Image (cartoon, rainbow, N blue to C red; front, side, top):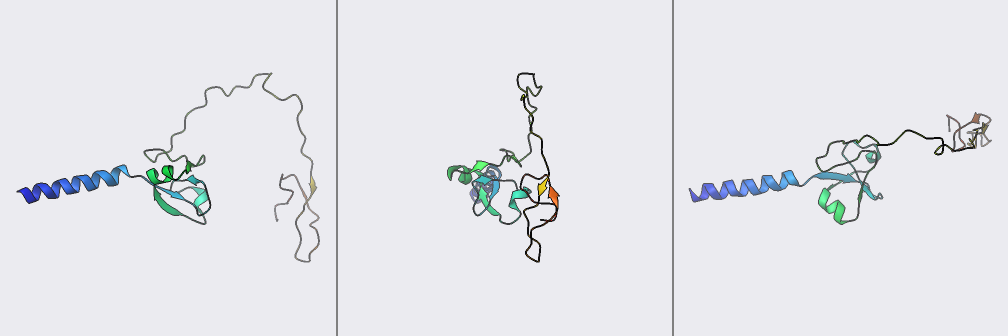
Length: 123
């Protein structure tokens, strides 16, 4: 009977620990911790406990928002209505520029782009 109580106590402690220890993921070079389905874990994924990640100085990813219960909790913004004083007085117009990418022949691409990185859809 004492052996049975010891086994039950041992299982209770182990199960309780595994439930409370949440698993999060980090990248090789990143400073954030993520959920398993986060897009930033595409190339590297290292499993770590939440407590250890926090103790090592990792911060929560703002994209996948790993919370204590590992669910996505998104709160509604309180004040998103813009007032006339919040809107900028001058608006920037985006103009198309020549792509900065190189072709296979080594020449500069002749396409135009409005992307901020200066490259067209092919580069």
